[in-house]
Length: 157
Image (cartoon, rainbow, N blue to C red; front, side, top):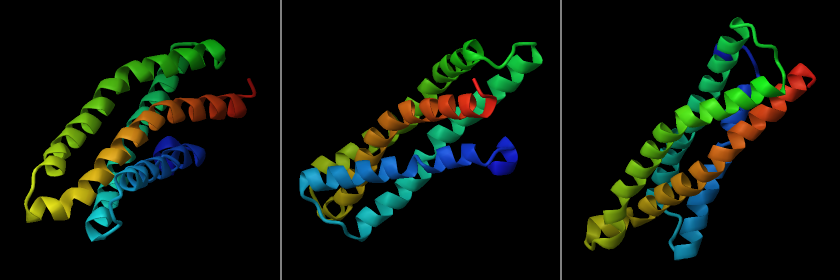
């Protein structure tokens, strides 16, 4: 990712979203009184793969829009920064919500149906639902804010 973005800090922003998803999964496990077992660990692996999709998409869109507007002759200032953050938010919100909602909704039957298979998979479903819900909510705000401060710091605005 560092080669793709030509920057070492943007991949760090993407990686910093991982604890948000893990915290969401742990929080929902704690709230429901579930155990941290092997199925919950599998849920955390799923979260690690899904939670970084949103910031990768958003950072990629932010970088692409910045390059596009610089080529069109805009200067790097507050107006450009505000414009690319709002436009990237508009473009990325639907895919972000679709991935999170479809995955979380697909796990809901596991929570409410009985049976030995569902009883074993309940901690995994809780981790996935909690990680995606809380992680997606905070990632939606964290990535643009981190980009805002990095942009201002790099360009001395």
